[in-house]
Length: 470
Ligand code: URP
Ligand code: ZN
Ligand code: ZN
Image: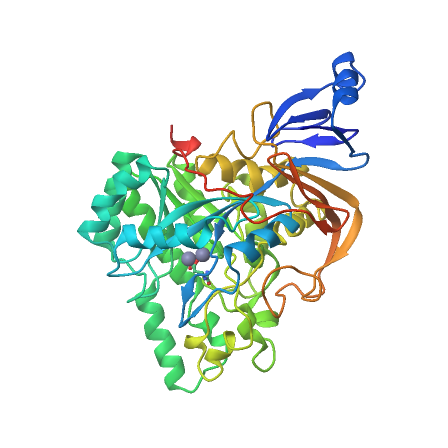
């Protein structure tokens, strides 16, 4: 089956060109000069022709931070691999990297097998795994080399959530030393969880139990402190480090300093930190703020966090935009913490909206079109060892292609989204632009507002080492 995509503007991380694209089976076969004899003959021989006039033709989105069915706070993230990857497809994301989770005391292999069992045969788009190491012990350290060899080339460690996922500095240093030898990338949740637990307990004892206290007891300073500590540990170990869900200027400053000194320090941010804030969202009246409880938390609008994060995306101190998609419904899930913010499951769903929300950065003049593609597709693929199979429209790459219509308008709402959530954190947001057509490995998944995918089309992707470390 061949598909010829004509009249579009192909956008890559480095430029934009009027180029026709020939897809053969599951891969991109050629990029052709419009009107050239090769393009004319490719079009006439194609099984299917897609007219992309007026549209951007971009590599499918790569969301390197999702949590399908994550067990958290006595419940499970509400998207399964089936519903979550279908929602991803609707939003132009054709690859996810989810976190297989080993909690403190659990066996790493058993935890990974459980994740494979949840995902296999369920996914609309391709998927890979990072491994969460919760409370690193000797057995977990021993497994790291084997996991890297079989395609799990990044490990998330937590400086937050004592007793659940938390690792102390010695445990982190040991894991980083392993990574320095085996080429893995350590991803870090950088918040000082020990200090946060003290502040949270004190707030609850004062009767301050509303959702907004989730944010107030997780000050930006404690993200900055943990970020600095993790960088120092990484430098001592000689390992690279990648900060997930960076939310605060204080953390970004530490990352920028380390990068200016030439160290392999990388970071991602997420749409929620670019658009939502502590006062208006986490501090919404009644229990509404529970829908915005996530960690790191939304930051105050009194500070320049959001402005700084957009700047970081431009300067590459923030290399990636991921969603940290971790959806919970208000009913029966967020409600678990109605009397105490500490019992609200942490997480916001957004896998469906990342491409649209970050495209608004282009509309607002914060990012170039190329930088949109780079932060949402190309760099995550390179960072996590999936490039050039993913993240680029080039001969030989998987035919994961999104036609994006810059002239259409949409609105985000719980009434129209496809994630398994009973609210939307971005309710009422107007989007300039629209994901028009989504192709995964040559198969059209979304066309004319219809889902044409099937579960099981997406398969597990073993990953290589990060392109940035070789
Ligand atoms: O609130 C969040 N981010 N929930 C998911 C777990 C994590 O720390 O990424
Ligand atoms: Zn985290
Ligand atoms: Zn996460």
